Amino acid sequence: MNSWLNSKKTLVGFVAVIATLALSATSGFAQVEQPSQVSFQGIGLFTKSSNDQTPSHDASNSGGFLVGYSYQFNKWFGAEGNYGYTRNTQNYLTFGGPSSLQSNFHEVTGTLVAHIPVSARHIRPYVLGGGGALVWDPTDKFVVNGAERQTRGTFVYGGGANFDITKNFGLRTEYRGLVYKVPDFGVNSLNLDKFTHLAQPSVGFFVRF
Image (cartoon, rainbow, N blue to C red; front, side):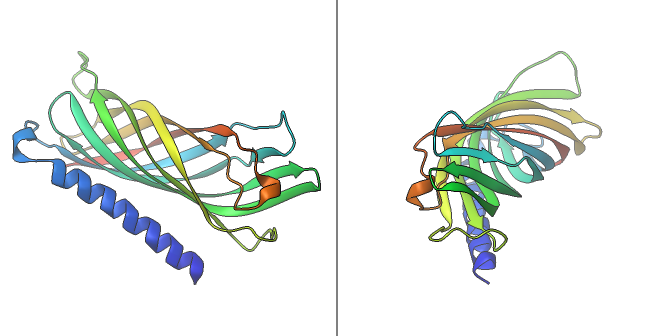
């Protein structure tokens, strides 16, 4: 029940990001025929290991999904809000021995998008940068005393390309990198006080309107 409520709160936050982007899209920016785009992507998550100290940290590789809404203000510039989900395991080696926590992983981000002009008519490359929040919500599979749901801020960068198949539909490939502080779930023995990097390649489809 608590996990469902926490997930609902995360989704509400995602909707708030989208609403903010929509409100900022005033008529003065509406210079693109189809400025709105909704995307759905399958993602892979690969976290850099931090094993050069004790405690050390390593996260299992996993797959998930990423949904987003973007608004293109003009031919050069736009903004996008995304929500992503996966489930993976955070592994630690502490002075007291190994510990593992499986958790539901949520990401809520907002980015600015710069569109890169190319001669190919149906290919629309872009780069992005922004920030957001990452949420780890422990499951009941592994139990560490005192472990709690935790939220960390993140910096996001990346790029990709949209491939138009029809006027309203196409394919998207993307790479996103996320930089954030290693989670410790509020447990002192798991605190590395160190930043890590998450590589997130993805592929999916989009609808324009």
